[in-house]
Image (cartoon, rainbow, N blue to C red; front, side, top):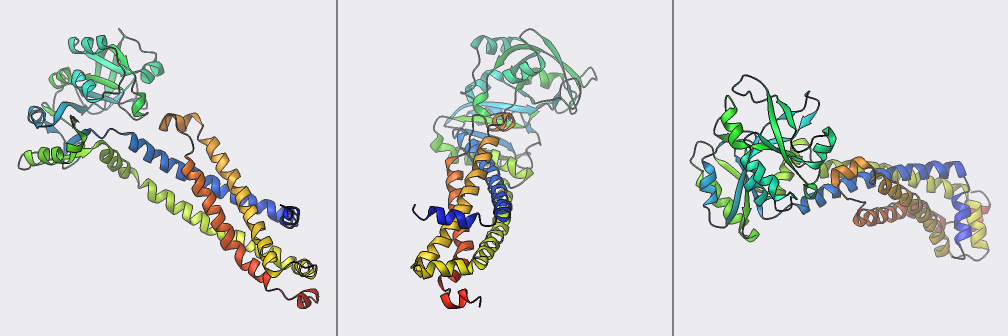
Length: 383
C-alpha cells in the first residue's frame, strides 16, 4: 500500500486519456455483464425446468397436428403418471396486437402434470363442468381487469368456429398462479372437448402431449418407447424433456450463447488494444521519471510491478463499475418479468474480474517490461 500514491499519480498523469480509457472499459464490461447475465439467466431458467416432464410433438414440426387417439396409448406406457395436451388457439383480445397465449387442454389432467401451478380446487371442478369455461393466469386477469364470472370474447387468426366466426366467447371460471414457470407460460386455457367440437377444421388433432413421469430416471426409456410406438404411423413423434424443448425453441430465434460470446469476445479484443495503447503511451511519456525512480534505488522488478499495478488498477476499477451498472440494470422491471426474481449471478461478476485481470496483464506487461529494461543513462539523456 505504501506505493499506492505513486501508482495513482502515474495513472492520472494524463486525466483526459485516463477518463476516456476508463469509460471505454466501463462500457465494455457493462455490455459483458448484460450479455453474460442474460445468457446465464436463460441457463438458470432452463435449469429450473422440471426433469419429470416430457413433451411429445409431431416429428415434422411443433405446429403440425397429432391425433387425439395417441392419448390413451401414451397413458398406458409403463412409468407414465399423467398425460395432458395442448392445442394452439392463437388468441388475441379485441385486436391482434393484444395477443393472448391461449391453449385448448384437459385442465384436470393438466394440473396433475404441472404440479407447481397454484389453483383453487373449486376452479378445476368448475372448468370440468363448464363447456365454454376458461382458466386464466393472474397477471393476464390483472392486465385486462377480468374476473371470475366474466364472459370474454377471444379472437383467433387460426380457427373458425361452426358459426363462421373467428371470435370465440369464453366464461372465466377461475384464475391460477404459474409464477414458478416464468412469464412465457401459457396463461389462458379452454376446454379441448369444446374447442374440438366447435371448430370447423382440424377436428381430432392437437399439437403437444405433456407427459408426467413417476420416475425422472426413466425419461430416456419412456421417450424412446413413445417414439417407437408411433414410428410407422401417419404422424411420427418426437419426445423431448422440458429443458430440451425450451432449448430448441430458443434456437429457433438464435443461438443466444454463441451471439453473447461472439459480441463479448469482439469487444474485449478491441479493449485489449485500447488499454495496451494507453499503457504504452503512459510509459513512453514517463521514461525520464522511471529512470529517476531507478536512480533512487527502485529495482528493475519493482518498476515492472509498479507499471503492472497501474494497468491492473485501471482495468479492475473500471470493470467493477461496469459490472455494478449491469447488476443495476438487472433490477429493471422488464428483466425481472422475463426471468422472475433474478439478479446478476456471482459467476458473471467473478468471470468479469478474471477477464479484467487478464486484460490488465496482457496490455500492461509489454510496457512494464520496457520500463524494466530501461537504461538510466539513455533515458535521462533522452535517447
